[in-house]
Image (tube, rainbow over all chains, first blue to last red; front, top):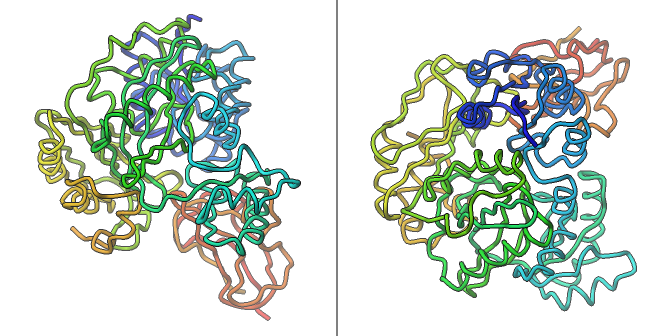
Length: 453
Length: 79
């Protein structure tokens, strides 16, 4: 469906990122902004700004009526949700389509399917995606939980069907804890997500987080390679890279091909990410969840494929067909992404809002900066602490590490505290160079927490 | 009268979650150390507590309103 004016229902670096591609495609852009964001860098770049409400996200960026109203009032005929906020809200996706506008993302049905983690797991199994041992779908109250748990084996995790992103997960180490943990997990899931459904899954102690980028048009689905996002703190990704290093080729082939099958099974249209845990001891990879949106770490895939993922995402929403085939996608070199957050690693990552009095980014070959701020920008206390992403490419992983250390050393940010010292310290670790780290690495390495510049 | 001040910049919430009861309401008896709301700064939440016991006279900030450090959030009549 053709369109010419795009509403961007987001803020910060991803709003800037989307405006850039939209402009190259000849689209007019309208930024839906909260009151304090009406003078942001993204607002400066957009063709128009429509204020949708006060600072609190619940009254602005998460207010579906206000966002839809802004799109209508400004004559937009397409909506890009970015990531977070309303990007995986099926009701909003449906409302956009019902209003006659193009939703830049998969249809509401696919968002709903993947939003229900136990249904998503079942779909993955049906598509031949490897999964960890677990209950088939949600546990019903009549199920013999003890028998199912014994089959899965201990330790295991109880997961909320409506959870995701690391939320709503409880560990059970022995059979006698099962009943009480199940009761607690159901109550918590009801409280947190409004749905008490839970399911069981095998526990993996030291795994890496790998994921596959897919792109589909509802009929054809291709992959754009894999990424590794094992360097995390409190379930939040800190450093990402592509391709995923140290993955045996049969495992890589399996996750790539089965992710395509999962996309085909749910007639997937647009960009999506299939996430896996990889156990480096057993060499098994298994499905965690699928994200039905553009991902924060998409630039590392862009660096090794030479593609603009936002462009492909917008074009498939407009034209309805993929213009790329699998043979058109090639992979060159290695890329890292570093998330620069306004938090103070020396004070237990206390948020650090303020005004950026100095902001110098690195340059040179293979360097890209996706920033939501410029010198003089106010970093408001109301939203996520992500300021910018530094993305670095070189031909081999070891060279990319050297170049990244050089680039991180050139960054100068004054006015707020940032996570730069953590990023530098992580990259200097031999465990990361030798690929023996897991998703627990940062939090289990005291030297990395409380690091000062 | 004692003012309860915001320790941080961010968003003040009167409820622990949108579908939960408020921490406290105007006219309530408050004990020293009791939470009367919370401030969200960059997705991290900190409870706001009263340093004195007494009656919660009034809130000076609306629910989900923006606050700066030192802003008066609520007023307590000590007793």
